[in-house]
Length: 200
Image (cartoon, rainbow, N blue to C red; front, side):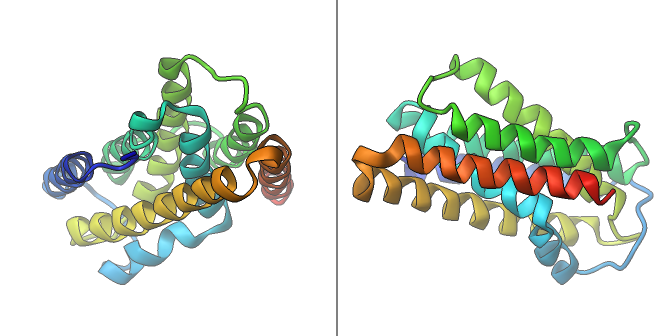
């Protein structure tokens, strides 16, 4: 059973890199410019929880052959909105909305046994990813956006893969307790989002 086919991974990677390269041509970001900045940025608690949750949710809630669609949707929306964020586009209360998106992902994990329509689930993933992308873009360096974008795309993809592996582990080793395991993970994720919201 192939959850992440080589073709799907290549298509996602090529699309994300193409978007990142295109976005490099027009932005007015700020902050330090480096690949390391992009690599380290997603390790903030809000981004980390959200990206791992997407991987776990995709294994649990999407059909087996479509697991890749969750991470791919997040990555594409993330890069596109980061390009907009680097050009100064934002929304009111962005930090609060990013924290609430973590709460949302936690709820999606808790209720993952009750499958949402795939389009609705992926739509929620895309909206949340767009919020995270705007936050990434707002901290883009003044030059070298492509390197910065490649950095956060690589880390995001790795965190998604970690979530997928965790989801597969739950399926294989905790099959009879999967609902409880997902509820526990989702509760912790939402609690983390609420904590982040309270600190803003």
